[in-house]
Amino acid sequence: MRKIVLFIASSLDGYIARSNGDIDWLFTDQNYGYTKFLDSIDTVLMGRKTYEQVLTFGEYPYQEKKSYVFTKNLDFQATSDVEVVTDLESFVNDLLLLEGKNIWLVGGSLLIRDFLNQNFVNELILSVHPIILGEGIPLFVNPINTTTLQLTGCQTYSSGMVQLSYDVAT
Image (cartoon, rainbow, N blue to C red; front, side, top):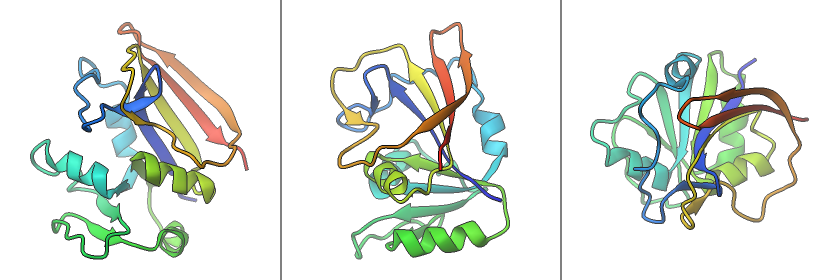
């Protein structure tokens, strides 16, 4: 059965981006398992703000994946690379019934909260970068349900980054 995997990076103090959405602090000196992870998924899910930030990087990077952008803004217009979703619960329930590879929950904070609160996340892979930003966009925003995780892996890198893998307890 397909799984929804939150694969994301954060600073040591729990931020996924600077306040302006910039991710210039993320390490890019190694692959850190990213290519292997991309090969394991065929669908990407992201919030509108994350999608808009991704578009600032140039060409849409997930063209070979089925991509969905979640928004509550009914007037939002996306590029032809993605489909817009406004009803999270029914969409995800239908998506999980389809055949395919795993599904990547890209972010951002509000969408992560909604997915965790609906118990839609099956696995969490968190790359913790050895930097304290002091402020920014938090990985988790309130209100969020208590979620029990089971550690399944811990990978350390010479850069000081630590990648933690968890299954979400059901």
